[in-house]
Image 1: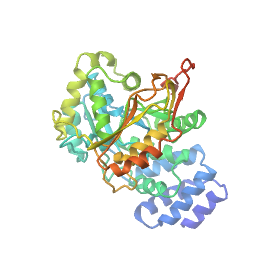
Image 2: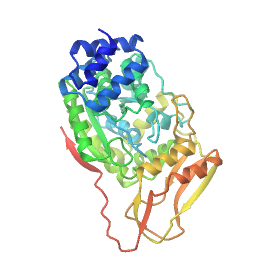
Image 3: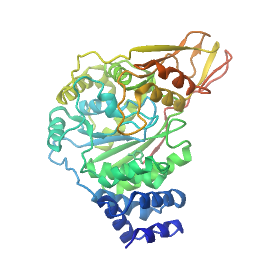
Length: 425
Ligand code: URA
C-alpha cells in the first residue's frame, strides 16, 4: 500500500477500499504518510466525497487509532451533546449540570475555539482555578461525584482525528461533510457515551450555511452513531444570529450562570431545555422535567459541585476586560439583522478567540449585545459593547461588524427564525 495510489483513487473519483482506508489512517497516525500527502487526500475527499460505506470505515479507523473509554461502571445511563460550533453557543455550560440534575450522567469531552466559533474549554477556563485537563480516573471520579464532567479529550482518544483536524484547519478542507461527520463521531463513539444528541448549527455563523447541507451532515452523523450502538438524535438549530446576548469567554459564563439561576435570555433557555429533553429521552431517563430543575436550584447545585470538583472557585468574581467601547444603534426602528458571523469575528478579533492553536485567549474579551433581532431600537442607544484588554483591537473588531447590523424602519414586519429548525433521528 502507498499514499500516492490512495490519493489517486479518490482524485479519480474511485471508491476507497477498506484496506486502503485502514492503512492510510494508521500510517498517517504513525507519521509514515506525510502531512502533504494527507492534505492532498483530504482535498480529494472534499471535492469528490465519500459514500456511506467509506465514511463508516473511515470513522471506524479513526476510532481504532486510539483508546475507547468505558462508563459502564456508572449507576446512571450516559448522555452527551455535541454542537457543530456557533457564536455565543454556551449551551454546554448550563446543559451538562441540568441533565445531571435530572438523572443522566454527562461525560462531556469538549474542545477549544478556533476561528470565529468559541470553545467550551476556553469559556470555563475563565473561572479562576478551573482545570480542563483530567486523567481518565479523575474524569470518572468527577462524573461519579457530580453527575457531569466537562473536560478536554485526552491524547489517546482518536489521535488520527487530532492530527487530521489540525491539518484540515490550515488546508481549507474543514467544510467536507464526510470529514466533519467522521471527525465528530469518531470522538463521540470512542468516548463511550450511550446516547448522543447532536446540535447541528445552520446559518452564517455555522459551518453549514444552508438547511440541505445541515440535514445531510445530521443524517450522516445519526447513521454513524446508530450503527455503532449509540442512541443518536440531531436537532438542526438556527445560527443566523448569536445565541443569547454575549459572545466571549467570561461573558458567556456569566450568562450561563443566569440561566442556571432561573433567568437568562429566552433563546438560550429554550435551546438548553430542548437539548436536555432530547438527552434524557435518548438515555431512557424519564423523571424530572428540566424546567423544574432550573427553577428549583438543583441544576445550579450540580454546576457548583461540577466546577469545584475541577478546581474552579465558583464564588470568585469572573474576569472583566480592561477596556469597553459602545457601538450605538445607527438608526431608530426594528433591528432586523445582527449577523452571527460578523459578531463572531468581532469577538475573535477582540481577543476572545485564537488564530493559531497555541495562541492564548483573553478571558474578559468579547461582544455584549443589548438587543436581539426583532427588538425596537432608538438611534444612538447602546447596541453592542465591545470588551478587550487591548484597545488597539477595537478598530479591527468594529470593521468586522460592517454589513452585519441592519435597522429597518419602525413597523417593519419581522419574524425571527425558530431556534429548532428540524429534528433527525
Ligand atoms: N468539529 C469537529 O470535531 N470536527 C470537525 O471536523 C468539525 C467540527
